[in-house]
Amino acid sequence: DIRIALFDDTPAHRDNFTKLIEEDFYDSLLFHRVVPDFMIQGGDPDSKKAGPDRVLGMGGPGYTLKPEIRHRHFRGAVAAARLGDNVNPDKESSGSQFYIVQGRTLTEPLLRQIEQQFGITYTSEEIQRYLEEGGAPFLDNGYTVFGQVVEGMEVVDRIAQQPTGPNNRPLKDIPMNLRLD
Image (cartoon, rainbow, N blue to C red; front, top):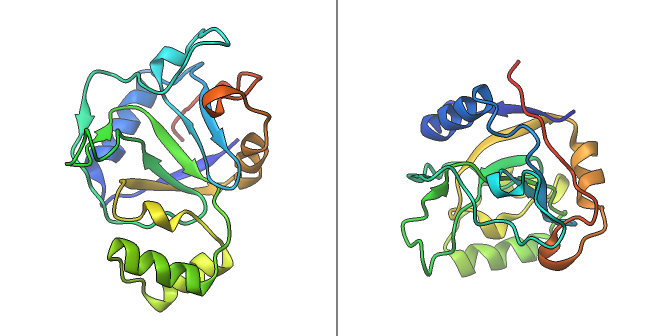
């Protein structure tokens, strides 16, 4: 089990995620993209009963969400996937696809480089957290983080280590079953 706390200051994403869970939208969907030391991604409705050669990651519920970019990509961050800037300059989020950051620990020089490259200023507390816990700071200010894993990061770590094939799809299907507490 992976337990997630949703953030109140990202209400559109929180409410959408909750609605989809209540509708059983996510039941039997796959974690279809897994990149060790980075993240695990799921929520593509096309992944349900998808054959092993099917390329996944483009499906959704037929709508996007306006960005609510407020939080950093620390280890355990839960964020909305989205199309890239070249086709999505407004950074609108997928209506259903999400990822959980596994991340890696960072060095202060690397964080300073990310600050310069992306125009981000980290607080001393944020720097300390990235140094101690890790994450994916190169995604900061680009994607909506709407929750945080509060229990079960060891499960995220196990999923992230699964062997993958083309497009970082796990060779063995990893289905999800989301529910509200």
